[in-house]
Amino acid sequence: MQVFETKKDLQDYLFKKSQQNLTIGFVPTMGALHEGHLSLIKKAQKKNNLIVVSIFVNPTQFNNPEDLIKYPKTLKNDITLLESIHCDVLFSPPVHELYTDKVLATSFNFDGLEHQMEGKFREGHFDGVGTIVKTLFEIVKPKNAYFGEKDFQQLQIIKQMVLKHQLPIKIKGGKIFREKDGLAMSSRNAALLMEYRKAAPFIFKILKKAKKRFSTQNPDEVTRWVEKQFKKHPLLKLEYFTIADQKTLKTAHLKESNQQYRAFIAVFADKIRLIDNIQL
Image (cartoon, rainbow, N blue to C red; front, side, top):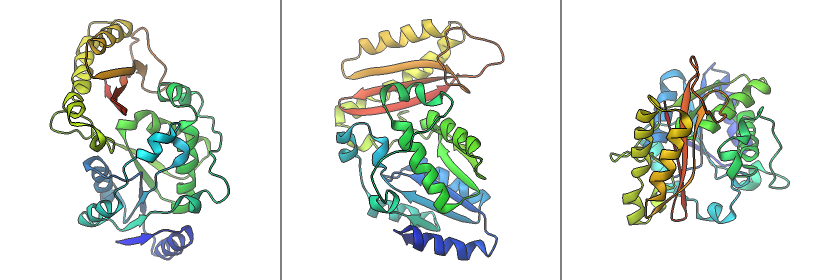
């Protein structure tokens, strides 16, 4: 596997490869890799000749500085994992390589997608996401890019960015990978204290029950039921639960035919924030 830390070295390498008419598949990550990330890479390998993975903990998408400091950094282990599945290229730049002047995000308009759910609780988060993903796209110039559905709102926002900026890239989603007990795989899981790790599968259990209730109840009724369950939980604190239109991400209050819905949730397990979602 080729490892690059500078834009110039990576672009020089990719330019040489482009002369061979290779199709580039790109998987941007923030490291602390797990099976969910690896599944995206394996998916990319089926449709592309050359796979580029980036590892970059992007400072502009953290609205909480403490969260940025605590974010797990496991580069040595990540490289071992990438080599084990025959990844072609790793791009792991320092912050100053991608933010050459000031570490600031560009302001984006995602046609309202950015104001729902995560956008209500993490001010400026999606400007940071848009800034770094667009920057990486411009460096790597992939034909296909892969993102996990655990961050479903992010996936929709990136699709919108590609559309609005007319970028010649196809965005592909990958299913949520879960631990055996149902907890959605996340780089943050490793930071959970034992009692919170044992409690965390409750999140997916509630999502599955909410999905079942959605067949006979309206969105507001399901939401009230979920909120009630978390009020009774001794460890987990619900930040939000919402049932939203899968396309617009706007909260739904009534079910309409020919619409697809998804339930979204954010929960604090002590100081660790966990998100998940399920298609309804």
